[in-house]
Length: 556
Image 1: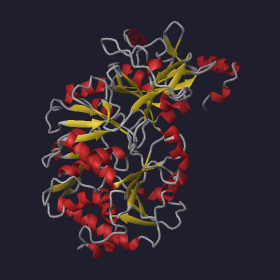
Image 2 (image 1 turned 135 degrees about the vertical axis):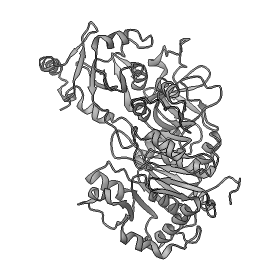
Image 3 (image 1 turned 60 degrees about the horizontal axis):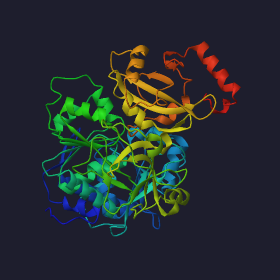
Image 4 (image 1 turned 120 degrees about the horizontal axis):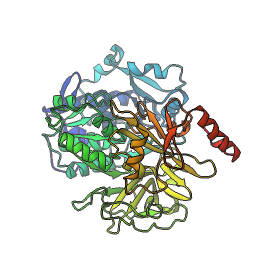
């Protein structure tokens, strides 16, 4: 029986499903009711209570694709007062072992497909359960009659840890952000209200559940609104519309460049024949969002909220195109120059929306007010850096217009300094994305021969397109908001953009390879013409770097 009372814990949301025999979980092998999903979660909660060693931190690792077992164990952890560490299956060897051991997981849930990842790893004290096996089913069988609330390691409360969510930082070991049941339940409730989620909706989860986007912005608001969820084991651009139609999906979330991959699929006459009404995510870019709406008839809503809980931006009806909104209730957000600690001046925007003072206006988004940040698991140094000077530093670049609306400008790691001018990679990417031959774009810094950075762009071309340097030069010359320092010095043509497991572009690998890679690279001359960076040109370029003593910055 559903109620209208605002939930205080995720455990409460799981328990509310009990007795609801409508469809609740759709997946490749069938449909389960809400009641059945609560029943499966309760059985695993009871098993978890019996398996967890006495005195151990109530943490379990989940190394799974988006199969029904993932939400079952999320629900089980909520009911049992335990915490889930979502383990990234693209991690390998010591890094993978480090993630499991760092979060004090005593139980690891996985599947046969991921067993090769665990071979040879030292995981002392960790019990591995392999879903879909006879041994696993035999372990669960005695708990089939369990009900929500009957078994718990600790009584679930708003301050109970539920997630140890690994951030996807570009350097160093990932940090495990702590997320409590109360904060997650509140986040799910807020999104369910914002998007008017009802029992008639179907939330399509194609982003990985070990990542905060799918869990917080897709699974949780569906729980709050009583909507079923539909799982795709792994994101597939080619299968996206077929899934949407098969499941009757009305809502999905995206991260990184998933929207570009969907736009790169071959157009079909029935692209608008579906039930989808809304997509919610980050970093789609205004150009791709407009293309998506035009082709599929679906509105994309860009949002911003740090998974760590430190800052959020709320969209209002008067939010202008390209902006994300204003500071959320209780937040005191400012755009700060990290070098000086001073607030950046407001953005100066041309009538057509071009940013005219990016070097001065772009800075790091900082929350100077109260913060919902709950810390990192066993990482006091990272925690202190995130909250230095009593403020919460998001690590994201923004600018703010005169009316207070905030615009995303990329990650602090993606900032470039060209001829003493600070540039944001995301701003250049948004411009290059207008080129009709580009299916995906990534902009990043490579070292200048003398000092600072130069702009390099990786381009994945649409099917059937070939790189035409003259046409590209003409395109650049016609972009009124492409500053004089923004034009790419180097252009790399890739068959497919390297991505992380969360469908974000893997800029670390692109920066590491620089212009010394197997793909074709074009080099812009002082005249503005692009010519191939062939072996003789590369030799000349490397000699220039060596003459300036910058060989330490060259990639291998």
